[in-house]
Length: 387
Image (cartoon, rainbow, N blue to C red; front, side, top):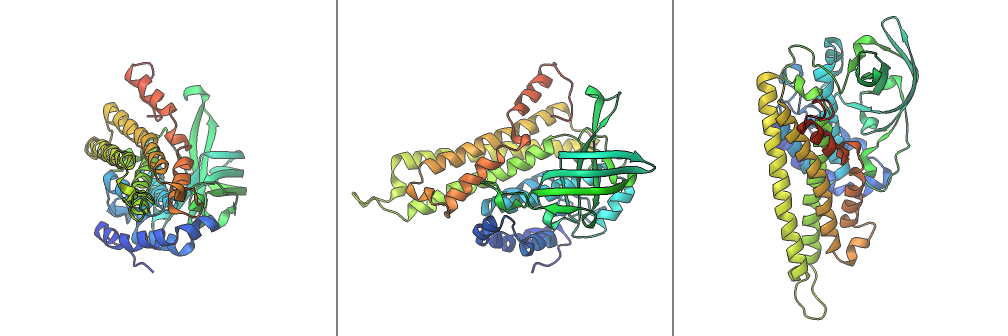
């Protein structure tokens, strides 16, 4: 079992052991549709969910670049584990930016606090004194099997909001909700992205906050992390960079151990293979450099003024969207030259291919995001949470 991390250095020191466990258990995790309680506990022990939180609330004080590195390195071993870790960290950052003082204290007093939420809800709710009473479901709640708090988003009527509605998020302790195991996809099968069920749950106002079109609570130094869709698309991007890395490495290993049965030459030496792999390496380098540079810009501006500029936000969103789309292209190009072994369902290359072609369907990686950025760039729309 991993030891409780107290600093960011503790996390980096413990990460290789967690990565090895994720890698070694990936096939079994996919079969049972969950990374497993042991790996989940180890990841929470080393602080993956606290990497973006400030030290003042028990966090590890990591930067956006640290978070991207964490997600991509775990994803290179197992994309499901990487996505769960990245998603937990992102959800914690959003709560820490937007939640009430009472909610932040309530959740993060536990060093292994873990939030799982979803924006895909089918719910009935009614206002009551001091809160909402809610019944219904949220689907695709990644990591909910290990969460300490669960919930999701609701749309409220608001005449002063664009289109007459605004979105809020609600959370409750895990004991107040049920989890129905509905997650059974072709890829990212081990994320445990099941369905959260509220059956007549009262949520006090202290556990309700506005998001993603939110204004961070005054005085929250990392409050800029809690506004907008860019944080989600960055999370998806980090996983696709890890998948791209894994695909290239897996094909190099696979073909490095084979020879051409007619010539005896190493299979890796085939010109089409060499060109494809080196082109993939170059593209991956550029994608990672672009994502890191844009993350550094958003981080520097956010920590300085609390509000990254429109230019930095647009660059971050574009870098993330491009990493998602082109990271998938890298996986596909590696798959194309991998040979017949890539067809084996139980093989590493096939699992990477399935994972990459699953997460690309996440709404945060949709090509619609390019349109949102373009409309802001050409002054057709104001800057909004969509960018």
